[in-house]
Length: 297
Image (cartoon, rainbow, N blue to C red; front, side, top):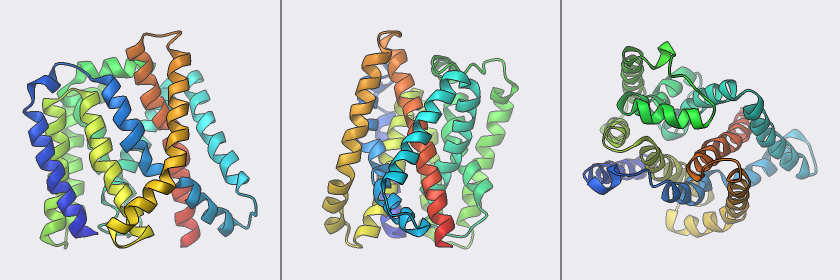
């Protein structure tokens, strides 16, 4: 998988350089396109959670899969409710967990060792910090649509952001220690890709490209590899298994947009649906991964 991920990072790095040079992409947010990509390519990498859930249920000794579905849905709905009541707390927690999630799933194939939580968090924090550093005003406006106003916080001072960017780079170097040149190059390209995207493009486009074409595809490839070591044979099986949950999620997103659009502007509604929707999917997804990891030890 390391060689496959290396070529994936190389392709993604060149894609980022190409997109950074397209002036048209710098002129708008392309929210509808971003939403479409996130709903199709982006969330599909979590669409095998129901299969993982079946394995977890067996490990825990339950007979009915409905226990998993009810718990998964409960965690997702609880996330949304907490956002409605305590938006600042929920979004702050989500950003921390998302940073860890991005750092871990983007590089876990390198080394399966435990106790890398802080390293993964620092590595993944670049996804959160880079848009704040290069496009602070636009990023803060997105946060405000999510009822998360941190414009007066010392955390977003440029000096703090630079420190986190450097720590993210150091974490990538740490993960590459005693590894071959492919791993070292892969981590460097991933870091540069995120910086290039966020320097040249606006925050939502930069995030969408990273989330769909680096994070989601890399995780999907690891899932396909678990299904079949031959990616060509495993891909159609993965698509078939991922399609039902992906379609249900898309329907949920569309219904949410139709409801929320009665109270907000369309752009504000899409921002809320994208990020609160991702939060409601990320929390149960990470909880599932954690429980599976603990039961496999």
